[in-house]
Amino acid sequence: MIDKSDYVLYKKGENLFFPTKQVQNMQIIVDGSYVVYFERDGRRREAGVWGKGYITGVLPFSRMKESSAFAKVLEDCYVLEFDKIHFSEMVQVSYELVQNLVSIMSSRIREFSQLRFQDKS
Image (cartoon, rainbow, N blue to C red; front, top):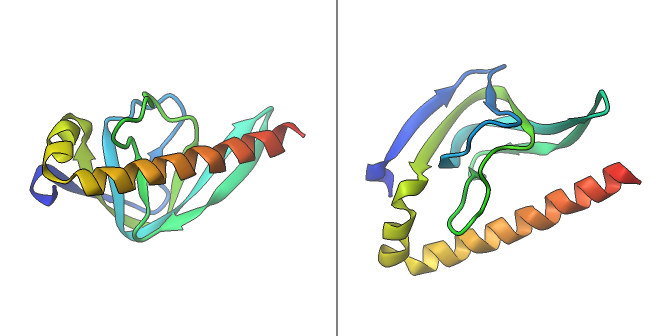
């Protein structure tokens, strides 16, 4: 997986992602941190701060096509980016890893659904 990934630096203040940005990669935060937030009706709603070890972006079997939130880098963020075109090979090579990533995806869906529900109340 590492051999097929790009090692990217996002500088403090940059957006790691933003609404409507096409999502092509799974991203593993190697170092640094970022804050995720939504903007609705002119209000900013923070979803949390994530850093080293967090996995974001598109995951295997995800139907996500584009981002729905902002992620602003709080401190220089080193990211390993793995293109989704390699997901089918990943399933063949390490099904156990894919199972764990699907579990992460399920947890992420629950967390963001709870945030949206709280935002509407």
